Image 1 (cartoon, rainbow, N blue to C red):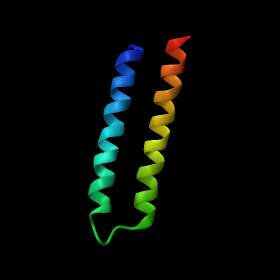
Image 2: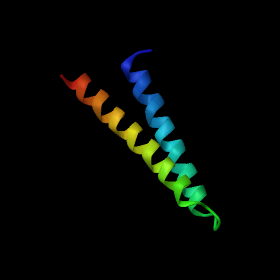
Image 3: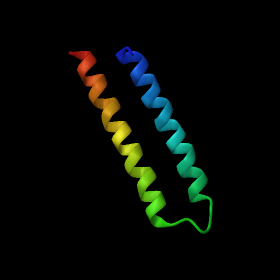
Image 4: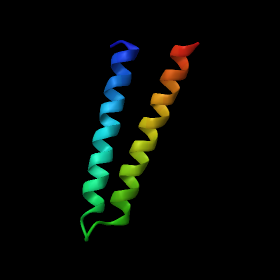
Length: 58
């Protein structure tokens, strides 16, 4: 998989997690741990996207 394709895949997953987070936040009985897990996964993806973009610019 090329770096561009990998980046696109990561960005898609990040968007999916954002949608999942919005849906979870809209539910009254959501546990804080579930929200924290989604946010943690989003941060990992964001960091990986930044790292890959930085690597491709050098």
